[in-house]
Length: 229
Image 1 (cartoon, helix red, strand yellow):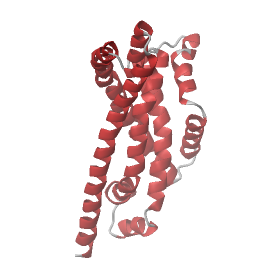
Image 2 (cartoon, helix red, strand yellow; image 1 turned 180 degrees about the horizontal axis):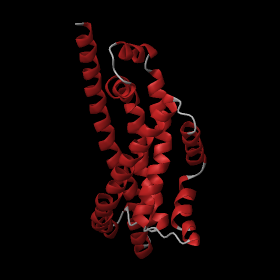
Image 3 (cartoon, helix red, strand yellow; image 1 turned 135 degrees about the vertical axis):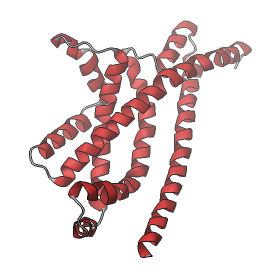
Image 4 (cartoon, one colour; image 1 turned 90 degrees about the vertical axis):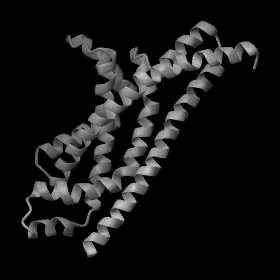
């Protein structure tokens, strides 16, 4: 580790971190937010057993869980140009990541919905609530508490998966690192550095996950006590 290498790492740190703050994090936040909307809708459709729509959701989940994320990125960004559809790199990445993550999260939420005792649904009907009211006020809040750890893990995984967006020219952290490596010929140190930055982001999210789980546990215990009273 020569003095020149330390200077290179110090200089490249901000050049790598800045794309992380302006591209990697926004890509993750936007894509995961859209993925959650897709996942909740797909999970509710499957839980309700809506004919036609249920089969459509199963087909969507089957396709996006069964094909590599990198292939999906290439199909949307490069492949669709053959049929006259051109999408800019960042929107293409958001589209693919949200659809891919939505498929996985839909299964997490569906399983969480099915873990809620059926008596909760029946109790809601007994007090005169509609199906949508029961889902919004009783079933879905309980299911989301159950699904929270798995959804948090999916979010952490997505932060790391955004490195694949470099393959469709999205200027995020990994692409910024590749450009510096091409100029300096120091792949080992620079790739370790970007790995540590990804680790930093993942560690922050892990800490937030821990805090969120504690808050949800406190909220759940309070809800049980209120119900008992």
